[in-house]
Length: 239
Image (cartoon, rainbow, N blue to C red; front, side):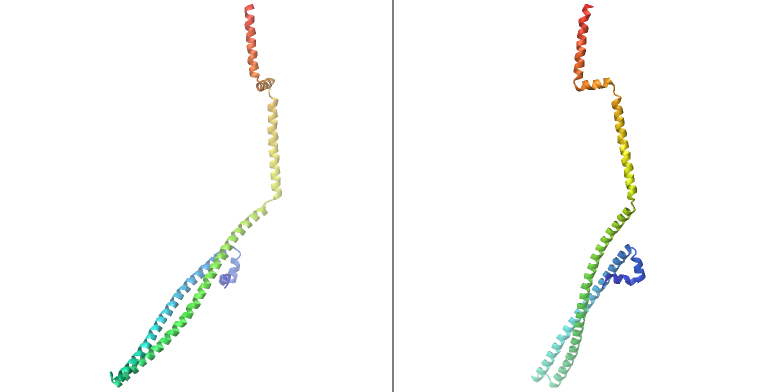
């Protein structure tokens, strides 16, 4: 049995139309599996009913077989009692004959119940085998459907990426990058130019202060001021 044969029972034209869209076959497959599970539940219920009939037939066969043995024993006891003089011969023969008739009816019933039991046992075994096979196929189709759904997701994502990549204009992308590179280089050159302008606007005093600061100029300036103050104090008395 093929799962897709079951799907296409809806009609060839409808099936081909549905195959144009990926979602439709997946939904149809899921519905088909649900239908099969419903059929499986019904089959299990039918199996239970058949087994019940077989069990009842077996019990009826056992009861009828027991009656066969019981009536045979009773007929033999009647004959024995007549022979022993415990019962009149005529009465014993009449009762024994009726017991044997009842035994014959019970024997026919036993054979009928036995045939019914064997019949329903065969039906039960056959249906049970088919149920096990159907369970295995449903499990297989469920696993296959999971794999197909995963592959469908991957193929959809791949198709989307490939479509996006196909729509990308490589030449325009390269041109855009080139423009961006040129703009960045212009900004870098402008920044460097402003740096040079800052260097050129520094005064001589700034350069001296910077140089003195690097070589301990602050100490030299303090010493110079001290010398000048000393010289000034020496000149004042002579004045």
